[in-house]
Length: 265
Image (cartoon, one colour):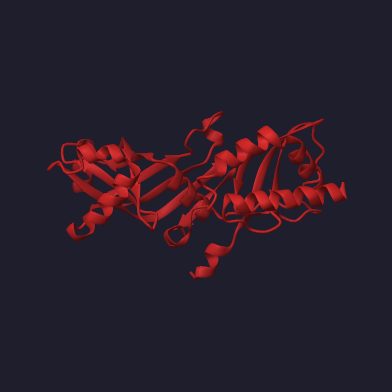
């Protein structure tokens, strides 16, 4: 598979008179979700009950390839399981999600969890402590060791009816969204101070008349709106006029888009 595949973006379903709106690929969305979350559910293969999965709450760090790093004790049941069989999966769900849990994003990483070789432990330690500063109190205990998941497959779910497999190559070579850390603040600001502008953008760019518009997600290619219309609630995807890479660029592009929409209204 060529590297060009990771630059292809997903798109909203196109209607007969309206082209699809570019969206981040499933690989990009999976990397973003794994980056934003801090805790997952690790399923190992039970030694006590062969063939049965054994679930554990599992904090994790993350390396540059998107591979989860675990700090686990030799006394833990999942450690015993992994030493007998390294195959495991890690379920990560959208952090701070509200509403129907089946409607939020989640990703399952499937792979082999193995002890990190000694020469690589210092880097793993640094990455893990960067996400879990409190682990400094037990990170050097003799019964704790660093493990890493070598990802072999990925399954991503964005919500109802939107899901698919992501290859290990695409996952490794994708990047988390550049707005990941700032998305929450951008959404709060737009919904608090610019609701009229969102209604205007929905009317001009998504061709949907609405009484209320709420931004519910934003990424480097565009944003999602939840719209209250005469016919009920609807969703819409609006593309940025150009790709953005930071909050300052996002603000500039949104201002330009609103100005252009006003001239067309």
